[in-house]
Length: 284
Image 1 (cartoon, helix red, strand yellow):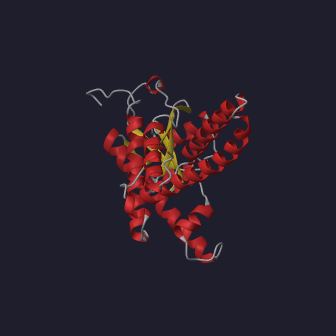
Image 2 (image 1 turned 180 degrees about the vertical axis):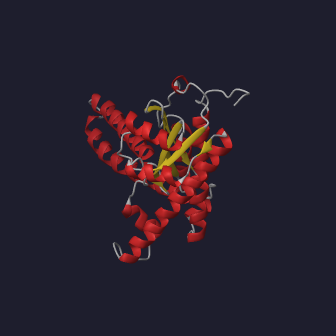
Image 3 (image 1 turned 45 degrees about the vertical axis):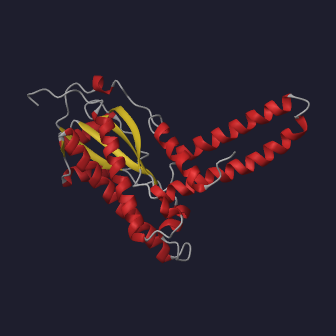
């Protein structure tokens, strides 16, 4: 019997979150080999959040006319808050877990802007890395951004849909292989395709409501070589409140959910980074 209730779908998606979170991004287990000594100073750079204005409009300006100045302002305010919060949480987790000093000086900020290091499309070359090192005397650059804010990460959505489509096609193929069931194979494919898609998107909506996922991706660049030593991503969730499925969530509660999810994502990403840094010596 199919699990069609939103509660069951939510639990299934949450289980998928646990299983998928360990494999959603590549880990560079040999990062320690490219970082000879434990870093003493770092530069943190946040690139702009990946925007999805139609989604953000529903989330942060549901009662305002679409594409109106008021709606755009509400979305921009929410994005500004998210980026400020993410930077603060990343820096806090980074300094607490790694004990590496962060350089946030005006000189460094100016170099970051001039070299467009805060642009996700800018590839960090050896020349750029050397200029940033000269301005900051830092050993590493940690560059990060929010890729999904308040919604199920796109990578998870794609994985679930691909699984549903593949399993449906597989069953339909088996049915078609036998003459007795061949007439119903096409009907099954159409009906199941529609039903599975509806269930999947119901699950995404449910997860969004109960936990407001926030995904952060990050990369570590060594400034003496300009090479990418590590890259990963992490998704944070707020507390799971199933009652949010059957009542209206206030703006204040939603903001608290998002703040909690950002904090968890930041702590996860730094914890992942800490695992690949060289071990500290007593002298350090």
